[in-house]
Image (cartoon, rainbow, N blue to C red; front, top):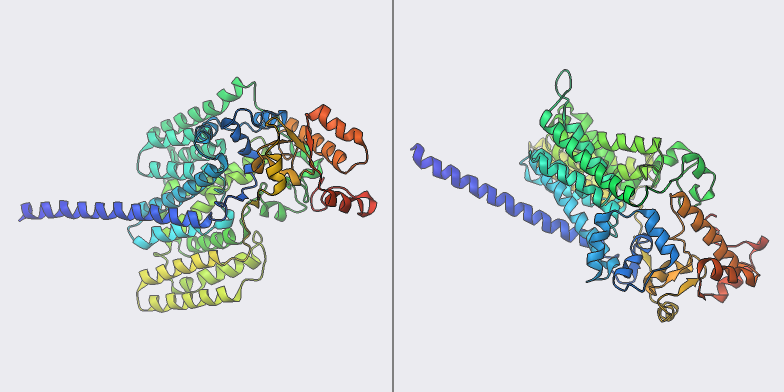
Length: 549
């Protein structure tokens, strides 16, 4: 009898493993489709991510070595210190495809991969099938606060950190260490966060006196050493990292103020924490998710014990790194870039804890609607916009359905309805904005594209924003190329900006000649109606009134 049952159990296990593998493939396909839908506007040929006009336009040089050999581009590449792995990836791709279009598809791939990793991490926690789907759906529903668009270096934070978490959970510490260290080749902050996760998990926190796990500690140290080498060796070869601003130095320039292109400092602590670069930039959707996750973790004390140590490391490491970046401002780049794991943690926490909390019927009734109303109107880090009545009505109906299901002891179904309602709440947040800038190839751009390949175009910095993409010609300066946190590049860019404005809107021909002498300008693109409008403004106002300087 036992001999007959053994093959059956083996076969049953194989069937379950096959079903789990098929589910995983289906989840990856679903994440890819959602990522494409989210990014569909940016996949248009005439729409470009704003940062692509800084970080990727010069990659056309690898397609045609005669393009973008100008001093501004050389200084940009030297100041930004693009990670070697990132530049190598795009250098290889540039020989085959348009690098900016490739960047958008890299962003789509990284978004889909991150959503899938969230799915797999939740599946490691629970066999309840809707849990992983809910978590991945919640994560991907945060359209406005994702940083995948364009495939810039920051897009690698989620994949590097989440893959490190997943491998560590599965006991594959060597692979986790390699991923954590390898992240430095694409985006050093991602590597710092991933190494932080390994370091946190090297400590056993659930005993009376925390103690180190020798094996985990060894791999965390290995990852840290490799990451440090990946960052420092290229800097030593290049003569050291560029000097960045201190907080006191940056405050002296309006560029870092509320109306500046680098708008970092704010008039109040609340505004400082709400915005991008300096704070958490949760916006409405992030606020809703944070409140929902906090409610689920607080309403039932056992819920936090359901989360593995690698997941619990995410908010701890993110907040510690955020505080460190604030303490040594700009030396660890932008504090906000270290907050990304908070989003993934909240999505995972919702997926893992929503079913165990289902017996608390009132929680399921109130969770989506309450989180939505508070997140978009009352929460200090949210936008404080009036929540749409239609969405509230939908969430109220979903809450009522969840309540009836739990009263009928159908807790799993009630939890699933609540999870879907939370996704609806995230999608219904009213503060959504379109990504990217229109950069159509107007007749002026087509004409500029006929200029010699070594031409350097001067003009209104705002008008020149798209020229490196549409005409593939270098510019003296543009609104996208002026901002920076490195002192030398910032000061040189500021000088270029004012010299360009003096030449374009000023009354002296000498200022135009100066552009040629100092910056090698070969052509001046003038829109006569724009100049006439500026000259009619009171007090001789120049430039764009919504942006300082």
